[in-house]
Length: 111
Length: 114
Image (tube, rainbow over all chains, first blue to last red):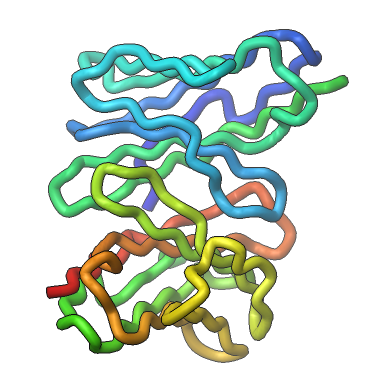
């Protein structure tokens, strides 16, 4: 079953704008991961942030983690049409390596 | 509506044995994806199947690994002659024909090779 919750469910922006997606979860975690899925393809791992980290950057991606609020955000700066995809967060509780995925945010970047 | 089911949840094999991991997609779903997760790493895509067809196996190791999704029954990920490096969690996900963007994940199978 899915446990992470992303919001919004769908997001539509213009090229060049920033896109922010949020993820909330319920249990304590070892790490949280963000994935991208292009239409009809498998998931691509974007970034992993550990529970003792608050912020992480990778190129145009910025991820924050607030364990007190059990939430994370993914920011994509200067978006491009090629960023159009679904974005999922997944939490890893670390005990038996179970992953819990949210339902995803569908991002559309208009050229 | 039951979710994606995987079994076994935990599997222990000795080096050289075969491992068979099963994935039953959600009812009405005809697409299955397999992923591998090594400890402390993200999921890595392995293979994408539709019923009786392998659509994309670009993430599958060239040797010892195979996957199938028969017309009837679950999808099977088969690892022959397992080695210690195969120890990982293996997740499958399913999606319905008409909604490419939604994947529903199973709980995973933890394979330990001793």
